[in-house]
Length: 431
Image (cartoon, rainbow, N blue to C red):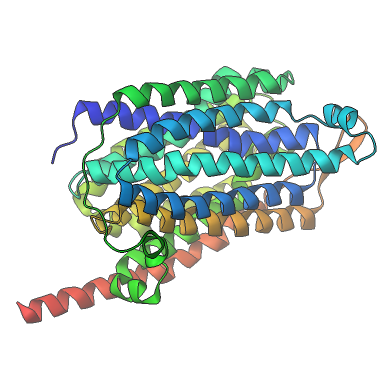
């Protein structure tokens, strides 16, 4: 099976567009809430956690449905259209508007509730289209010999999406034009969904037997875990890496802008993203040669070194250099883990495994990580005054906290190596 040009066009177009929408949800929505509704880090953490729960449950359900129905194209295309329309709706949630509609209620509380609910709906749609259907489609269209290269490219797309948003749309957020900002990203996402409806082709994949409910819960059964120990150990390692990133990621833009006081933070982020993306694309080819599973610990070490460097970095150039090390390690870590998971995925369970991936790569990290970061920020108790209002600001301690978390990845990776050696020993004995 070869990866042709048509695959690359759709993989990059759908992957990049999906990451544009996720960038808005994962990073800029926090900034929007921070700037226009409330500065509470606990509200930001709760926003992230609620969307993670919604996205994970949806991926478990939609992934199993896509396996059984074979409707990858319809779920991708239709989901992107609805996802885009929901994204555009964020800009209409404003405290002043809520106060005018419900003067007897606390406008801030109502606005927070509306944002959380809308974010959950957006996460349901995005998880169906991108996490369940698109990622299963990528697994269907690739094979173990090229997945390191493919996932190396896909791992760059979240950062390239950030770069596009920062470069083209950040002036809108700085000027307070949030409604236009969300409308542009939502409109692009919906348009790509329309195009995909007519142009995307999906390979026929084996379908699982049994009932739909059985497909949904299959991956959560202890017997399935015992039958596929390597797959679940890799997912556990992904949970550790993901939790580490979520300790600082929801607060990153605010940290660079408010604590480091770097006015040209878009330049910093753009430099980091371009540098790290280049390393990831080149590193993806190396992953295919050495084996993605063997690369997990080394690239996690690079990521941890970048986190510690960020703790000490002050000023534009040191932050750029530390950021490139950090994000290069992170992206290669995601590529290595993702390719390994694809290689261990049963042929008839590609969609279902996306649900398990969401549990470990999204649900656990986004429920645990942001609250760790919020606790670190609250403990440091750093503040600044914005238009006479005292606001909390993230501090460098979020990076050592993230480094302490990622050290735990050693446990599942060493267990993975032991299980693999035991399986190879048994195979040799039988051979």
